[in-house]
Image (tube, rainbow, N blue to C red; front, side):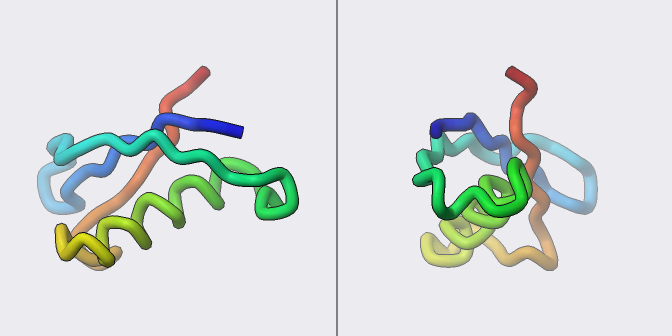
Length: 61
């Protein structure tokens, strides 16, 4: 399943970038929250920021 996830700065809620994330059905235990967590995980791996400074939201379908 694919979802578009926007990543924002926590401080001023400005859009920083967008991910297109694809997750397998077995990893979708709690729905859209898994996509948001994956976007924040990727942000940390790419050294763009941490979950302390960023927030992620799945775009409505």
